[in-house]
Every structure is written in structure tokens, then in C-alpha cells.
Amino acid sequence: TFTFHTSEELARHVAQIVAAVIRERNSYGQKAVLGLPTGSTPTGVYRELIRMHQEEGLDFSNVITFNLDEYYGICPTQMQSYHRTMYETLFNHVNVPAENIHIPDGNVPHNEIDNYCREYERKIEEAGGIDLMLLGIGGNGHIGFNEPFSIRNSRTRLCTLDPVTRKSAASDFFQEENVPTSAITMGIATIMDARRILLLALGEGKSTVIRETVEATPSDRIPASFLQDHPDAQVLIDEAAASKL
Ligand code: GLP
Image 1: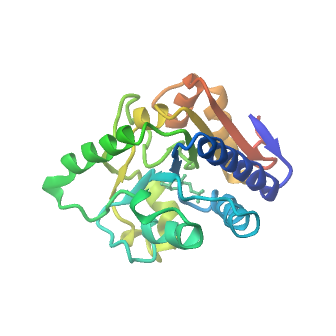
Image 2: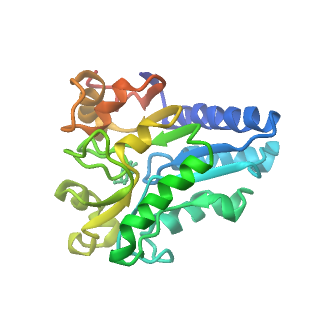
């Protein structure tokens, strides 16, 4: 666990790690494969990466991205879609080639979801696996949309959202009843396959779940606690999120 004084310091540190992975891969003429989250937590990191692109020429042309999740039954143009959020907070401002960007499609017809999810996994594998996975965490310990009781070897799939998650998303959708009831998410096993993982959390509201994530025995009760078993996972937080450790 690494604690930072401010969210800006944390964002700069994480952006430096992302940039180092991109540059290292570039120096071998290889692609850098990133797993990316949405939510409010990573926005500072994305802002810093945009700055590095604009001011320092950080080159994203060899970057491949896979987003963690997307609401199901949402149009990519809709304000709350993770698709739109990712373009607005990062992809519109850096030079990741469009064909290298992967975000689960929240509009796949129901009878095609299984194939679609298998194909998402196949694309990750084909890209050589994820080099660096950034994660946020839900107040109930979810990573991606792997809600409590998601199994350790779960893969990309459609899953039902926990009432806690829907409640915390209510303000984005103006009312809780407008929040989708399900989402497509990478599974726990998909996440655990990444070579390196950084879980980010900011604010007092995450302090309890951060304590459980790092101190509880790993179990599906707090899906993020499974990261304890990953050989290269770190928890990066601000002082408020660290206040119960
Ligand atoms: C959502 C996302 C997660 C994200 C979490 C925390 O439910 N599916 O991937 O990590 O919320 O969001 P925030 O960073 O806004 O606290």
C-alpha cells in the first residue's frame, strides 16, 4: 500500500508508471496493453496523461486499451456510458489509434452476449495480455463490476448490479430507477491475469473498504481482496482512504 498526501500526487505518480510502461514497450517496438477503469478516481490520471501527451510528446500510437466494464442496455453516445466517458476524459485527447480501443459494448443483443464476452477475452489474449491494469474500487469492494460473491475464476460476462452500486450511481442517472440493472465486466480472473495491477482509491468514503481489501482474508465477500494473491498488485490511496489502516 502506498499513501499520497493529495489526489494530484497520486495521479502524477500513476501517470508516470503508465508512461514508463508505454515508453518501455515502445523502446522494444512492442505494443503496451493497458486495462482501464472509469469512475471519478482515475480522472486525474487521465488528465495528467493528456498533459504528458501534449507537453512532453508521450506517444500513444502503440497503446492498446481494454476497458473493464460498461453498463448493459446503454448507448455509447449516452452521457452515462463508460464509452462516452472514456472518449471525453482520455481518448479524444491522445493518439491511441481507434482500432486499438476496446470498451465492452453495452448494446449487444442478449442472445449474443456469451459470444461477445468470449471474443473480448480472445482479443485481450491476442494482444498478448494486459501489461498494466488500473482499477478503482466500489464502496462494496467491487472491481470492475465484479460485485460481492463474484467467483475468483470469473471471466468477462454480463452481471447483475448490486443495490449498493445502483444507489451510488443514482446521481449520474438522476434517479436510482434509471440506473441499469446489469453490466458487462471483465471477470476477476481476467483482471488477475494482468501482469501488473494498480488499485486506486480516494477519499474517506473508501477507507473501510480499503481496510478490508488489504487486511481481510481474501474472499468473494470483498472481490478486491483477491488482489492480495496477485504477484504484482499495489494499492495506491490518498490519506483519507488510508485513514482506517
Ligand atoms: C463503478 C465502476 C468501477 C469503479 C467504481 C468506483 O461502479 N464500475 O469500475 O471503480 O464505480 O467509482 P469511483 O471512482 O467514482 O468511486
